Image (cartoon, rainbow, N blue to C red; front, side, top):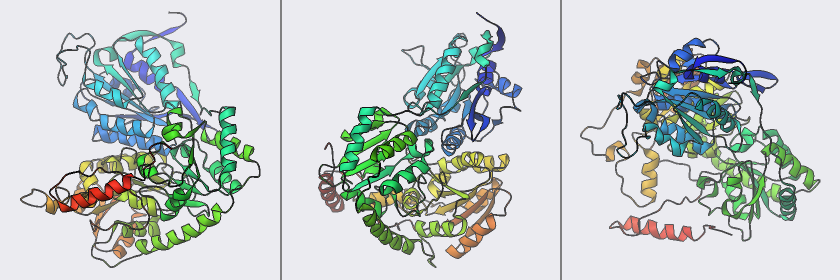
Length: 617
């Protein structure tokens, strides 16, 4: 091999390479990998485990209690870092590896960087079948790790040492490229991990990765400028790409200069201070009445950094104006032509700047005034559902109101993912600084919340991290309370107990279904669970309290500021109450035939609503 070499195992070479990848943030050079989450077992403890031990001071190894959870924490860290830094995760083969597949899907759907290093079977196949090996009777090359293929942006299986060189280069491209970004899986055959090789020293040279800012095609830019100038009722929909481009200030400047109101997606929420006069809040199925009213009448939508999830578009029934045009400004060309959108392939920061320069002094006429009127009406409706109550079982909205009054503000990040809370938070939470709202709603992964809170805290050690979670999601992955305590990552967890899956029960009712198998009282149970969540959280090392009212909740939240570790606050809530103001229809197919009269009526309403969908216009 040309040049100097160094003899290392494959595992040692992998870790040494990762340690030497850097980035620059606010003028400071930092490791681009903040460390590696690891649960050791056969398949990674001898190879990667030994390699990680050698660099434990420079490259932290963190231990969780569940493989899916640790990968979710890594994802949340990357999201909270606006994709500028990320983490790796390693597991044993078999169930340890497969536990991360769901997390890989979370990263894939949300376009977030994540490096997965699951152990794999022996490349030499001599001891086959090894413990936990999944045998394919027709294909000797298959292992359990092949399940990662559809949920990885790049997948490779390292079966020879020299394969690692190109695999690591491809890995860094995917993790840092704004358009290709997503999870990378390098399945590490366990015998190969321990195999030594003479590596070129240049492989371990320090490399600094900075954001690539894609500039638009001149023809696309000119076309879009012309369309905006011709618009009478334009609006902006800001997605997560605005945050990842660090273009929040550019978005606000564009909106102010051209007097165009701004709505946000779940991923884009906090891209604009929602107290700003032009901020409409969330749009779509869980949107505010203000954002949805302007969307219905818009003749042009400038969508910046969004992948057009159905919750954003109201299943493509939100936009009502004939001839309405969508301009899709996005680094990923894949997202720019959905539903006949006009593409503008560009980085959000660069694209907004060049669009503004091209528009010059042009301003939208009158739409900002309409936005102000609609927003005032929405704020009045929101204030009513957020107000304190003496109800025995408050609504989710009333709990949110208590959290906002007590801990809300620029120094707090609220974290959530699944159930009814994402819809209520999307409408009602008012973030004022980028990153202060952290919602995993691309995959809506139950169990994300507490694990995700750890990742957010690692990325924002000086901020209060408030995790809001329902009892259903808590029951799926509560082990990471112990992880947060052991790592010294303090969270405030607000646990809303509605005794089941209240969100899906409401959806079941809305589609004509009978109350069935969601709330505990409607399940085939001889004894309904009476779970002492307070005692459970305490058993995992947290401080915990159960409160009986909104007033007690506010007192507990205030007290949590001074606690030295994770605090869990439990409150019983109403499983049926939801904010009626705002929102939009969502396409959930209703059976054409049923013995239930309620289903028949729901089907008729469903067919009427489908007539408003814009399939292609």
